Length: 287
Image (cartoon, rainbow, N blue to C red):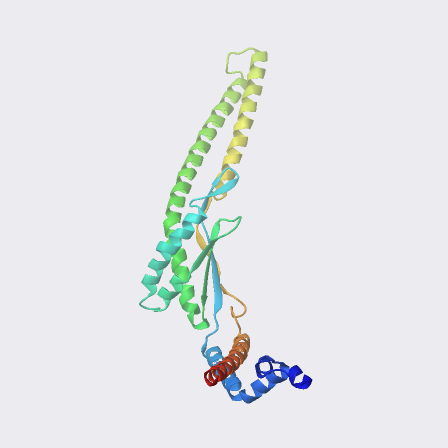
């Protein structure tokens, strides 16, 4: 019979699956889908409400440098300062603050230290809550104090040595100028035994030398007046990011909503596949 020959078999009919079947499947297992979605969403809302917003706190430490000619040379490379703060200064500072501020140790463990590009300094960064702002402020100040102590003593010693050398050089120049002017006066008053022409040439030479020494004196006085180094210091107060970092509570809930929908759909499909597998096993046993 042609009609029987063209009719699909039970196996073929069981394997065919369209959107209507999918809709029926989700309608029959709506409780599983919505239950999973509600459970995951409730967990997401709970975590979003219980989590405390985190802010980014930053502060800049200028690393001391000494003037050599017209440029400043750092007393310590920023890469060395970075390693020194992370492995020595920050743990020591947190240890000192631990009695009065228990959270200092955990904050120091999360500290990030970055060298400033094209600058003589390092940037301190750490994420923390608004309640931890005082602890972070105290930790950054303690770190800055230790770095200052470690570098400024050497810079001050170098500055004092440079100041002494400049003072000595200026005094020597003043003595030479005084001698030249005394010789000029002697030659000008005719107390020295020279011909008129020789006296004139010698006076010109002494005037030129005196002028040259006065220019040197003025230059050294300017060097003495301006700072010969820039000391290490913590620049300004600790700044906080304008808004919380990371995901906002709404975004967190949205992620859990999507995750709940995916898990619910996956669970419905898995249950359907399990039922289909059981039906096939029963058919094979009956056969």
